[in-house]
Length: 301
Ligand code: MG
Image (cartoon, rainbow, N blue to C red):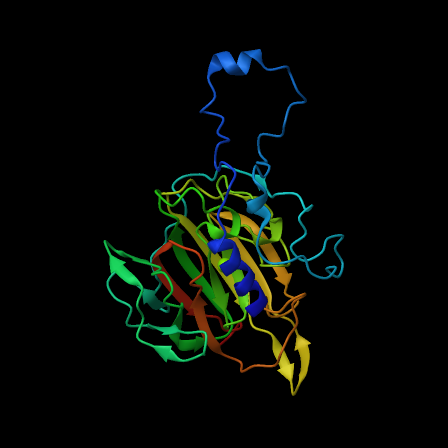
């Protein structure tokens, strides 16, 4: 984690010398387009990286078991783009849900700093959403959770500095049990290493498809998370994640390799049956609204 942070901090500070976001199909004139030689038709559902900085971020890690890719493999293909049906799923909390954010206050949250200390949250609440405040750490729930169903909506706002690309553009994340990150990133037209895009199980799998909406539009995640089980120091059952991203299946009961913050590859370390949920403060701005969670119980309980 620390090496990634250091690297990202370096990238954040480094001047970018090449024009960014110059690629834009709508920006080219019809005359210019007509003078170009015909090329092999690209797959319009995949946006290739246009700038090497889009691939900057965490270093490439170890081979992923059962896959032909390494962690953060730069050659792994981008998830296929899909336009989600509208409206995206925006569901209010059920009677058995814990409301974590209803647009009004951060009473269910604290801020966790790099030293692990929890203090009063400093993210901004306005107009029914909360927004990541730079350099104020990540949010962390006051309550711990294990097996859960989680709904939240997020947006990367317009007007972000165009020199911020890849992992530096709208980077947050839903970090279950303080360890298991489902990535949030501005991923409508901002390619990065595939297992670091919005909806990725960070460092393990890209989403099955990329239904991310343009900046300034809300997206929704509906997550089913099964906590790992440990017996003493030994893992006896991994964590499982199912994700619906804007209503589309992005992960289908996928077993995690372990904490996504561990490099060069995820691994498990025993932890309590319930742990708080975090919203990562990384490279914003990112906004959230309508966050609720249900503790899952078995049949007949
Ligand atoms: Mg993140």
